[in-house]
View 1 (cartoon, rainbow, N blue to C red):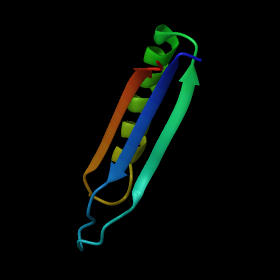
View 2: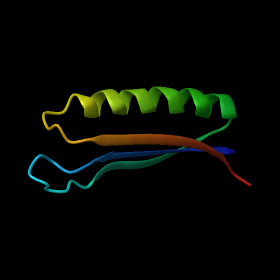
View 3: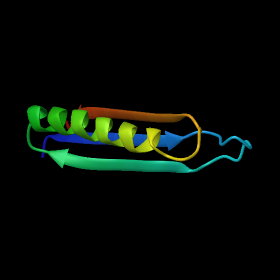
View 4: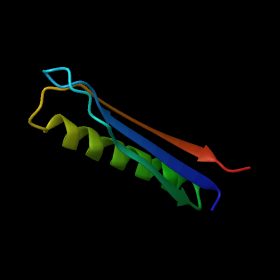
Amino acid sequence: MDWTLLLFAYIGLTANNAPLAPVLVHQVDFATEQLCGEARTKLGQDWAKALSGKDSNAPYYVTTSCLRRQ
């Protein structure tokens, strides 16, 4: 597999300033850049949607990146 998708999702401080742990650090391998890019878009949107629907008003952060293996 030549391409790796990295996804990081994090929820910030809650209303009472209690820190929450990172939600997810995930790695998936893909054979092509196109497959990695499609998964990057889909997973990034799905995680942002899931985190924005949580009961807390804590800020969240989701980032994804496709990296080519050397």
